[in-house]
Length: 258
Image (cartoon, rainbow, N blue to C red):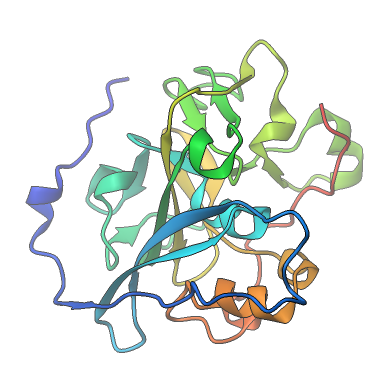
């Protein structure tokens, strides 16, 4: 099957923009500073405000999983199924309508992106490459590389007995088998993306059912109040963690590393 993305130029003019910078680089108090300083990244956001205007901003924040998972699901060139056809993730604009697994389209409310550079955070970020048909026919339709923040609607064999017939949202890293799903570690910077819709949903990315971003119930509670507020500030429409709404599907429980 040949995949062709819909050019951004054919989708009309973008919304009127209200530009602003997220001021979240305030110095931490002495009590918040660890003896070993946590590496930081620059996170970029394009999102709809509550009034429908477009917000564009960036923030420097700790390179910890709470933040990184919100910006590291899809790599450059990943094709997302929208109501106007396949669009590369880097060409999506807040306000686009995204097809979901429920059959109802939902508005794209937030796009997060960051460059994961080994130099910036002092570590390499492992990616997951999923070979064509690895999870079933045309799942994916072509080789697909995803980041550590990707969760896929696919129940691992080890959990099928516990899933009671339900499909689970499973971290892509837990699907690695060394043959059809492999881990790669690029030595150079990698641009990654994640998206939020008006509700949590499962979307089609290159033939794979992948979830949109949701922090879950526990991850935000594993950091202090200051970091949690900084995280929430990255989402202009979110005033409280409950505003992310319910999960569209249950998530796989934590499993031992492969």
